[in-house]
Picture (cartoon, rainbow, N blue to C red):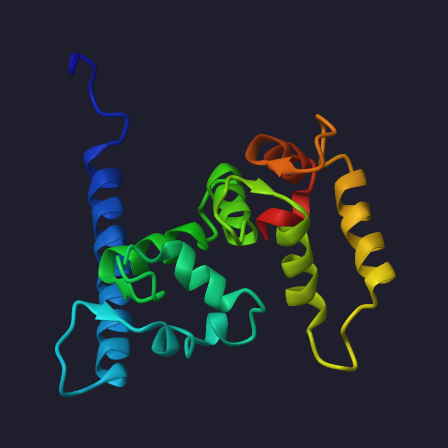
Length: 181
């Protein structure tokens, strides 16, 4: 243990450290701005979900509230984010995140009841998030049934148990090069 030398030259390591420092500094600045936006009178270590949702990256995302809840470590389950939560969110959605990390968090976001599988209720909520639930966009029961069935038939439910687990989800995602973008 520890007998091998570093794979990075001193120059590369120094450049890496500078880049990491700049990224952390930028993330901390954004988090601090969100804290100030939330309530100037209360100095909190968490930013409320409604303030996080003002981020341009989340404003139009149909899963924005679910994203906050998945990344939040709040015991109140209120979707508020600590700085560490915020870093996890930024990291998972960064261009440098691996397919495994991206698919893991995507699965958790789609698993609305947090039971480790995507079942009919999760798929219905997923479809509703994508299509909207207004009078103009709400699907009929038959259309919903077709969409949910289509998701399961697209080689997602490999073991044919009527649900999609993480490994099945990651298998499907691994064949989808557009997913990483």
